[in-house]
Image (tube, rainbow, N blue to C red):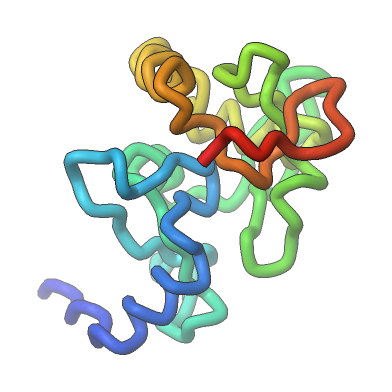
Length: 156
């Protein structure tokens, strides 16, 4: 038996809150060929609800890789930790872009485990980010670069 799609009103609320970004990798939906999906932060397979506070906008790849996982291994410490939760964690506390603006760097165990579990720096996405960076569409304007204390107004 298939799941019923989320009501359009709820989907629109999630999309508006995310401001067009995948809430995990900060990919920009506007530049993608496939519309982003609505992810259950706590998966339904783990009793997660359809409540808007358990939903996040996610690109296809982050949603697919996350699947029903709620933890991942931090490759630096070896610890199994919970994944980044966009409903209770601030993205900038856990992630930053490398100085090249292409590679996503985890600042915390949660950030590193999420990057590893969702394979956020896989070769294909790095090529897409590089092309987007070269035309000024990446990284998103409010995201920080490693070693950067502010934002750059010339970014999306």
